[in-house]
Image (cartoon, rainbow, N blue to C red; front, side):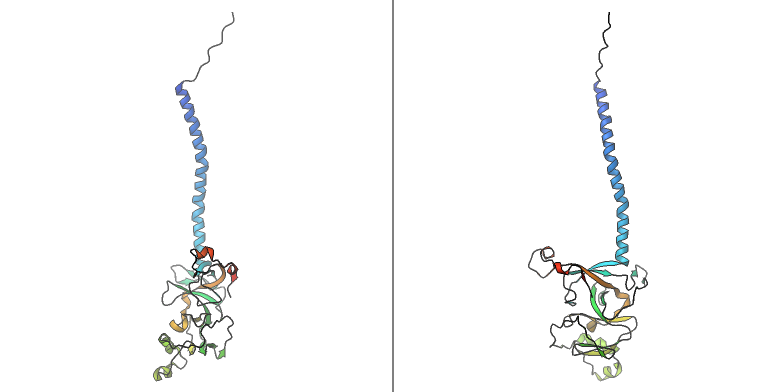
Length: 263
């Protein structure tokens, strides 16, 4: 007589539940593994990227925006610049010291510096006077060391007006004939006629290219070399800010300014 096969055993409810838990745990571990790996990789990359950004910003390149028209038409309001901070020797934070300069300052350089009256603001101007230079202006023409200068980058928006400004009184202490002029009260500088002045050591003299509409060294004096930040390299973005368009930074972009090298 042939024996009958044993009855098949159906899994109990408890066994089914245990199997489901094991499967779920397996899927959770499989999912959690890649997520943890991705998070850990980002945790390693982000601090390194932040440090690299800070190093680049401190010692190499920084972005600036042109807020005024004092350098038109070399630089326009709404231009965004990349500034080379290494060329004149970047400042080492919290030390007051600077790295070695790649080259010395030159006449005609466009420079970025901290505004001497309010160092929290950055200015961009044209360097026209180095330490020891004798500077003057005669009818709007810059005279350096006795030689009239041809400045092709200069714009005169109001050449026929030459206002006398009380802010120019600081110049008396740096005149070539300072004692005689101060005692006699003969020195009455104006926007287009002043000097001759002697630039002191470790300082320089700057003017805006928009010569008739620029708050520059004529008004507030020399710039200490410790305030120097660098020289602009290129315009990387530009838009027309004085527009009635709601979003001029998006709708009024000056595409032709992109990549303009600053000279």
